Length: 177
Image (tube, rainbow, N blue to C red):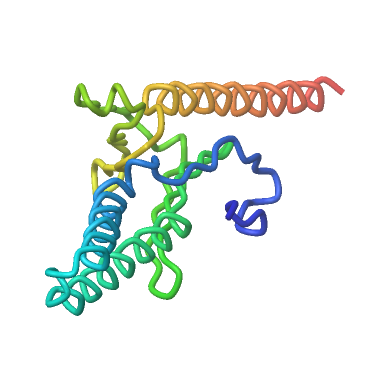
């Protein structure tokens, strides 16, 4: 489910719209697979018939956990636009943060060896706000995302400089006339 275009400003361009990396599902998917294997074993071996109800409860619980993680994955967006970084999560109860690009001071990314092999990691964005740094977890290819944020920050600085120099030129032209 893509980030809603109506939540962007009129002059804003969508650069990245990311959901968490698929690794976000790893634990719940592994437990669901284990539950299904256990259920198949329980149903196919007669002396395990006593375990049918507990295994069915285990399968149901892991299925609920997996579906809950999927819904959380679908409703979580890490968005980079031409003007800001946006993080939104939730369907009923929502949580979000927006960081204007001009307020970003530093971006750190963290990847452990295993995360590097899978292509995921965490981003810490330090901004000029009272909250300081914000951590965003399970970001796909965090070094590329970091670079893209810096590119957009640079493009914003160039646009701001052009607006200022255009205004000065117009003011200077008006003063000469």
